Length: 212
Image (cartoon, rainbow, N blue to C red; front, side):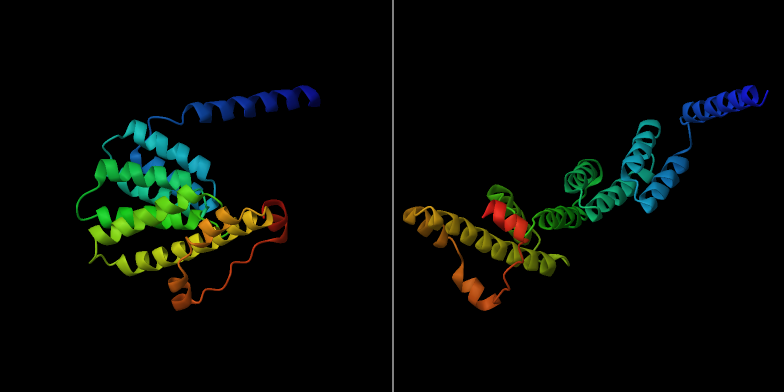
């Protein structure tokens, strides 16, 4: 009898769980929003994304959607999930961006790209695009309250580019390809390095061994 009772209890719990899962629809916008915030606090961003999808699907005109997008974008950024952060910032800009908020939204994307660039990254195109994006921001929004931060980002990205060019030149030097080595050495902004006097980035030994 105990075994039978145990089986019935298991079946009951299973159906309760299924019932709860099936009832996760047709909820107020505030429900999905609050559940999303709870999951973000717990660090469960995949679940938070799912709750956002439900909010968006069931309440397409909810005034909570813009805030939810920005919150999720920043949350993914903090968790170093920069592609998803970019997605939410882009979607926000497409749907709710205005002339007044364009500098803030662009700044968020620039910051995400800066954080995505690791000191020993070898993605030259990504770095070039990040620098170009930041420089365009300064041209378009010279009086923005984020301008000084973006100037610092540009400086650090260019110094990162210098380091990358030096590392690539070192590879060609080891291969005795003098012309290619000089090409990358000539791309280094020595004047900026002299002014900034940067400290070389620490590259983990295992990265150094297998890459350079």
